[in-house]
Image 1: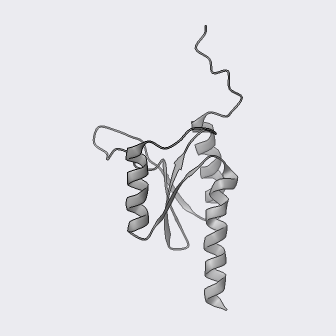
Image 2: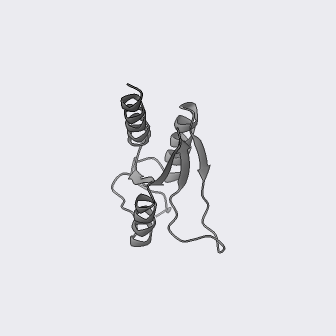
Image 3: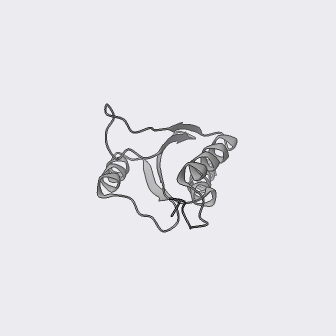
Length: 109
């Protein structure tokens, strides 16, 4: 066995890069969070701001789930008024921006 993954699903870092690029193309501020000894455990992979809304995105490969500490961090973001969720694709992330745009359009009418 060579240690290669047999799954055809993209690697998480590839998903993160694609999502980051798409978010920036829509005008979002995006920061990739790298875990370290000095950081808090479970912080979402991508921290974003779009049209004044704070967003934390935990990126997972299809079929994978967030850990309990990641779920707790996402819940903390939601309790503070932000948006945080697990995403597995660019389309998943774009749903969040689309919803913010819809909410903004509704307020401007």
